[in-house]
Image (cartoon, rainbow over all chains, first blue to last red; front, side):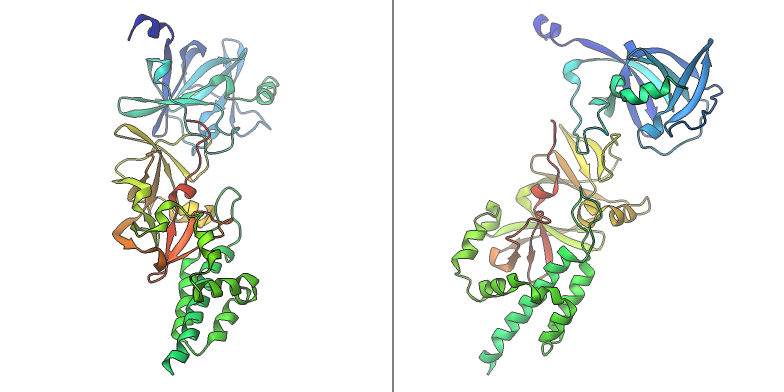
Length: 157
Length: 244
């Protein structure tokens, strides 16, 4: 690839995690830390996609049930389960995943748009897909993972 | 004498076909706005079989499906069959896909217990399902996921749900009833899962009862008369990608 093309095709780093049989990627710049599973205190009256809250060094952080959000069946946590602390639009939230895999690098040109056959709203947080090690990697746009209303609601927990 | 009996036979066959096609359209309630209506094919075949096995009971067909004989369109359909040179029919056929104008090769395949046919020209190849498609969150249940196959990324579709509707499709595609093969469309963007590929056969246009009015179920383009097998227009069955 020529130098000009490289400049217009930046390399991005993605933290990959697993949920069920699929592997997902999120922008490494939005990941603050990865935690082993800890006690998650349920919040009464919270939406179904909210697992509860954790105390992260004195700060209350809401943990999202990513399986629920992605329409996957629930699963008990195990030793591989992790809470990934992310920052999205000045909100700090945790997302529960089955396991965290690795950090991968890829060029923007490697990302393809996923076909959207449903309504725009339901899959707006899917940024694209790409092939990695003969497997599909689904890239998630964390800024669209929650709507503005949902983020505002999380602030009240 | 035999000549005198011939026209009623044609009319009965016509009624039986009408009953069959009408059953495809009318008998199952709308399950999901985003999906085509379900088909109760077994019932259609039963109605047709009854009509054929009881030649003296021309009225019996009407009793089974009174809506069919009551529809004003039936008369024009019947007259179309009796007078095949009718210009109106030729005009209607002109909106058909190109492949429907001539003899074409069709792939016969099975989805649940239903045998369907589709022109080979609308397919690129078929593959065995040897791995699960990657499920994309937030998509409808009939979109089973993406599958990388050679250089193509195929959107795998639940044919059962697209044809029968959501409720029955999901019931039939439970874990204990996995589909076995995928028919890949000509543009290699979509794959339709099916249980079994049966055969390839030639179909002549005059051996097909074409549906020229396809506001509902545009993918159901006609029926092979001899075998009463529905012909699926794959291009109309698969969704149009909103982005690529």
